[in-house]
Amino acid sequence: MKDEILGRGYTDGETIVRQGEAGDCMYVIQKGQVEVVQESAGKEVRLAVLADGDFFGEMALFERELRSTTVRALGEARVLTVDKRIFLQRVHEDPGIAYRMLQKMSHRVRDTNAQITRLRGNTTIRPPIQARPEDQSRAAGPA
Image (cartoon, rainbow, N blue to C red; front, side):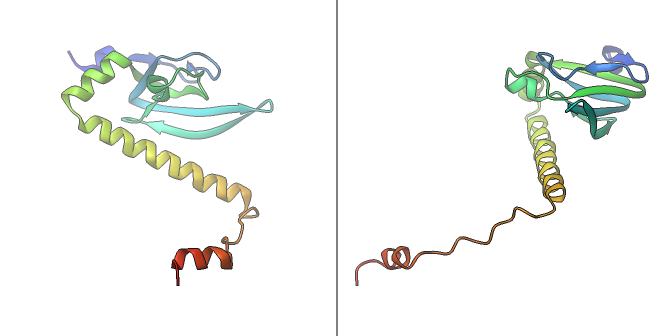
């Protein structure tokens, strides 16, 4: 049986996960696109658009926190649900899955850091900390 048969179809604008809900699974986009949005101060901010092969909601596999974003279909989308048991089984079968997932998560953190830096306009960057003379003498050891 192909994964495509296992996935669920979503229509344009249909919510897949909602910010603030409890989650216990992640999702893999089999076909189509989804948008990831976060509500803050009564406004929605689009954080990302994800497409075929991308995943979201993975944090629910590692920690019991509420969903931090809402994810909705952009047009027609087919999405596969992966719970913790299935995820661990697949990682056991192919450890490379975990490595590729960590690569993607690392890339997301790096992108987020770059966005934060751009939004701040580099106004909060501090000059490097200078070593104090007494610290330098201690590092040199006894004379």
